[in-house]
Figure (cartoon, rainbow, N blue to C red):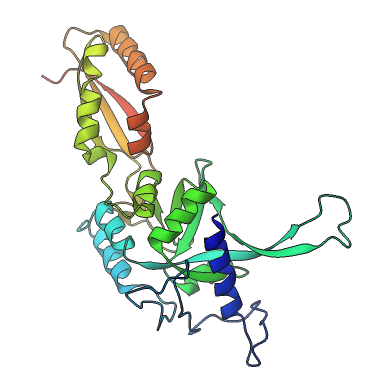
Length: 294
């Protein structure tokens, strides 16, 4: 994590944990409900939208709306990422005592007070940064963690710096939304995200492989089976899944038998294994072999 972000988190925490006399307050067991979380953005800049100035720690109405639309299939994950790009979320930080001395003098070694962003491990083993749309969601997930208000693009930048491939919005809530790596990168760079399955440049790029694979007629790109997700109560959501993000259907030429199709699949897998464009633009890929469509 860059020093300026770390320093800003430190300042933010120092500012938030004062008691009536201005002494640092112990936040353990203190309800965050209604706590005023106003102040500068996480990087020390005043936010032009002043969203933090009267922040009561509740969920942004824009997210509530998108969540309802995702469940009603009236919005896509592209809409969700667009909404997140303009939203304030809460990162979870925990105090961390770092040993200054590398020796076994732990009893009198200097401890440098530090804060660490909490990260979690996704089901597929990847590191993920959790963020929360409200303070209650954060404290119910981890009562020891302190909320730090942060713009979602900044949170994504921190995730990139920490080596987290995913950002998980509201773990533990009814609707948990996973932002996959290409969208995390796009948010961090403050540019629009084009999902791999809608990426025309990627489609053209993959079409170049058709001539290199004997028996392959064409490649079809579709949203992968892991684009959607389920709420905790079992409602399907049009987005927020951890992947696979992209399904590639390999359509065989008519003359190709089943052995030829397997060879075709193996050849294609070998070709795309080290393809930088596919690796960058698609979070996770599932290949499906299709006999020829008549």
